[in-house]
Each structure stands twice: as C-alpha cells, then as structure tokens.
Length: 377
Image (cartoon, rainbow, N blue to C red; front, side, top):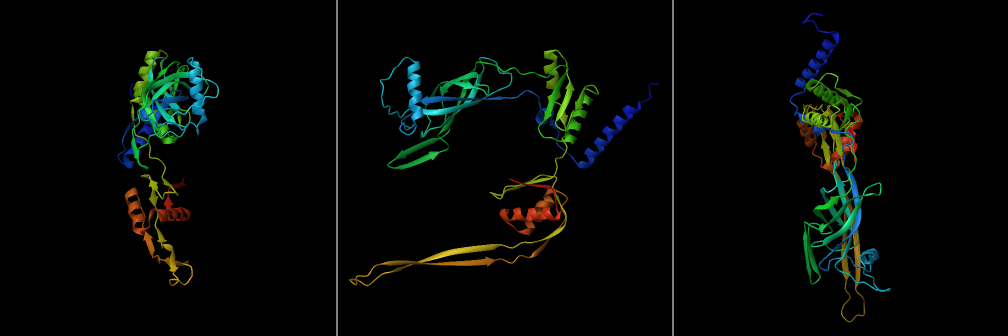
C-alpha cells in the first residue's frame, strides 16, 4: 500500500465524521459540554446512610414526652448504657430533648476517618432544634452495617419567637445540619472498571449523544478505544495500572462534546398550570377558538328583627344566587412556529391563561399541530 493510499474503512469513517460536522454546522451553534457533565463512571456512586438519635440541650422546645413515648424510651435506654439506672415507674417530663432521624450520603472512595455532613430531622413534635446537640448516632447502610458515627452541634437556618399566644417563625426549625458531623468508620469497595475496560453511563439515554461521545474519545485516543454498547452505556478500554487509569479517566471527563439536541418535549403540570418546553418544539399552522366560562356563587344574608317587646325572635335568612357567564371565543389563526420564540409568540397570541393553555396544548397535540411529546405530570 502506497503512503498516499487510504483504506476503504478509513474512508468510510472520514465520511461519517464529515457528515456529523456538516450536521452540527447546519444545526447552529451548540455549547460544548464536558463528558463529566454528560456521563458518570459506572460503579462510582454515593451510598445513603440513616440513623436514629437524640438531640439534647434545647431551650424548652423539645418533644412533649406524653405524646412521643419513644423519646422517653430512648432516654432511658441511653442512660442505662451509660450506667444510670432509673427507678421503675419514673415519669420523665422532658422539654429539652428531641428524637431525630439522621441522614447522610457516603461518597464514593470515602475512607475511615473522613468527615461528612449529616442532616438532622425531627420525628416528634419538637418546636425547634435550634441550639441543640446531636448525641453519638450510628449511621447504617442498606445492609444494616454501621458505616459512620455522627455527633455535633445542630445548625438550624431559621428563627422563631412566641409570647402571649402569638408566635412567628422564619424558615424551618424542625431540621438542621451538622457540617462534618459524621466520621466514616467503614469504607465501601468501589471497583473502577473491570479488567481492561471502564464503562461510562450517560445521564440521559440518547443514541446521538452516545455516538458523539464515542467519536470524541476515539479522536482524543486511539480509534476503537470507545464503543457504544447501547444508547446509555459506553465501553472504554483503559490502562490496567491504577495510577494510569485514574489519569486516563480524568482526561476522558475533560473532553468537550457537543451533545445532540434532545427530542421535542412539552411538560405540563396539571396541578399548578406550569408549562415548560424545550428548544426543539415546533408548531404547524392551526386555528384555535378559546373562550372562558366563569361560574359565580353569591349568598345574600338578611336578618329579620322583631319589634321591641313583641316577644318575637330574630331570624337570619340566606338567599343564594348562581350566575354563569361565558366569554365568547374568537377563532384565532396560529401560524407555523419553526423555533421556540415563534412558538411562544403564537401561544401568547391566543390570550389563554396557563390553566387554559394546558387544554389547548392537549388539543393541538391531538390534531397533530404540536410537534412535540406532551407529558402531563
């Protein structure tokens, strides 16, 4: 083979890359993102931890022990473990103690001795956790093993005050955080790939984005290093040495990729009337007639007062009335919309409020004028 000759396989690959470049140019400028923003390394994830504990030192804002017997039981068990035995039948009336659930997230590759943040949430009827101290609480994983121990002062980002039956509260007082309040006692083995390969998992399933990520990796390394197993998983050949593998994955995560445009989608919240659509949504021309129907119910209360010394009784009567008013809707021509700005302008021309817009979008989807996937949540 001469130095200037090119194999048919390489010509086919050049043609594919050239076609992709032309498609990206025609689609307009798209912001490049790092692979670490689009995908994660398989097996590298956090693990949730949970525990039950007590917060003490509250300023009279703790649980009402008559309504939360588990708080009293926890105090008795804790004192027993510390060598304090209460007489049988002791009725504890505590105001400065609150039962709480302690949650945290164990990061990947965490090692014993590392400090992690914890969240403390009241499970009783405590008014506030402000100023309290979390006592030593074991945090367990899904397998029932203890992975961390939590203890420390609870920080609550709120305030409250009450006097004379009146009270005011700013933010939330029944939950707080203990920064660096837990110490890792057991690590979780995290396999950074298996054998010669590591796997990247895309955050969103998309065939086009998977192809673009594979092309970016193969251009930066050797052709054939990355292979797409499906629309979400990409297999990448990596060095066997641990140091070289960490550096290789770090290089992969920094590679820029222009992700493919997502499918056209409109998300409608039927409870709040919120409507959100992405850039790919388009409209075909259609006509919309929109009118409002309002129902008004009024009650007129009248009081019949008898004359003085007549011996009669005061009678209260109500006269309800119901009225229905319908605003006539005009037929509005909705033009084609080739981009999001034109779609928004066309929908605003209809003059519907967000709740009515939900019904209009559903009707547009039914007749085929809305070129997008409509999801109602």
